[in-house]
Amino acid sequence: MPSRRPAAGTVSAAAQRLMRTLDSVWEDIRQQHPAVPPVVITLGDESTRAALCLSRFSANAWEHQATHAHEVSLYGSELHRGAPQVLGVLLHDAAHALNATRQVKDLSRQGRYHNDWYRRAAGEVGLLTKPGAQGWADDGLRTGSSPPTPSGCAGWSGA
Image (tube, rainbow, N blue to C red):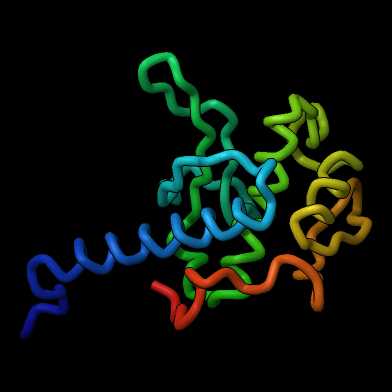
């Protein structure tokens, strides 16, 4: 039976293209919203994933030479959703990054629900929100306003 494994080096090349694309999209978001800080984007470990989470934002998760950086960890299983949905996930994390920079808590004490600070920051970066069971939930990208799909999403077909 033939192996279903990709040829040597193709996974690495695809992963590099994916990470360059995600970094490019984040930079496009930052150009449109200069208050959004730089982050380290990683692909998350599915075993640590909380139910219903598409990504995880971690404030000051990285340190290099006394400089801290936030982390956005995307779960690879969510990348098949396509450019608009992945952009929505990155914008969701951009809202958290904005609030982290402002030193504002945008989640409930247990980290389960988004509060009004999140709703405001989400609106700033172009997300619609709606009342959830408790707190605020994302409700898609705002159309006809900033941000348009960043250039890094052009031709996105998922992972």
